[in-house]
Length: 303
Image (cartoon, rainbow, N blue to C red; front, top):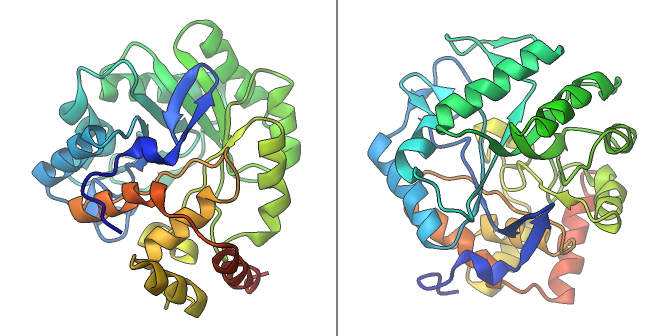
């Protein structure tokens, strides 16, 4: 597959409320470091290369970038890299961030924000780092199955005040989504999902589509490796499909998520310009029924 002239609009588009995005976006988690992310002693990545990757992503039609204030390593912050690379921002560029988790200045994880004041502080920190007067999309990231009403309600109030344009939820179950929807519109669910990763969530993925809610899978390439990236041998079925199409396993995994429904939005992250272009080119990768059946076996193998 030739990725040289393929742009992100080849993947189709989806409306996040009143925000139109191409279905292949970009995740910023891997930009601040090389190797494992979200750890205190992460190895800072190359600043110039990170900025170049961001600018190239936008040149190739990416208009949905996922980030967070807690995406940082010593010397590098994803939000500030985005600010440096892309400000002043294009009118059609949607920058999605998330609140809830928190890391201290040394990079250690601390307690999740649970009060309106704590969440407001995180929203304002994202605004400061990104250099904006409002946030396009804020996802409330959850840990656990308890009620999210108070926290989501606080974000809904900030939306009414004009600090946030659209709201989403992350790492949630169907009951938590419904709880949030009773408070304010929810445009997306951002959960871990991919081939062999959380097959028990298949019904929830379909349900989101039926409700017109975007599903934004994270770790769809890394799978169980999570923030460390790919750490285990690739499934034989994924390798076979990749060989048949002349692409990498990562591109097959991304294409598979897009085939799960028109509401699926991919946010692959990379600091490598070549990987970026290959990921964006996935928007034109069409998997056959035979491919999908073979990949379904790989997906179900983890159930």
